[in-house]
Length: 74
Image (cartoon, rainbow, N blue to C red):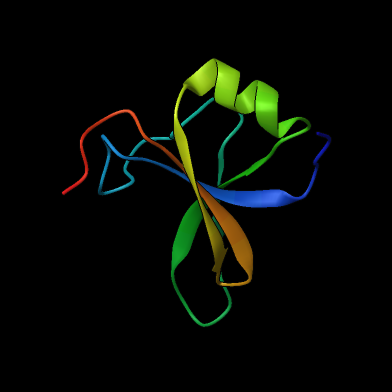
């Protein structure tokens, strides 16, 4: 499965998003305000193999969101 588009990426254990959620993540600021960690993933399955369980959300600000599920979410 080959991908390359940017995804919004977050980590369950860092709800505030203070730290980069994974290697290669960069902070992006959106027109109209707000920011998020972004990442370009060449291979989605390899990303999941490296970081473990992930939750993929359809569209957030026009981007697919990937949350690294490394902690319990209430």
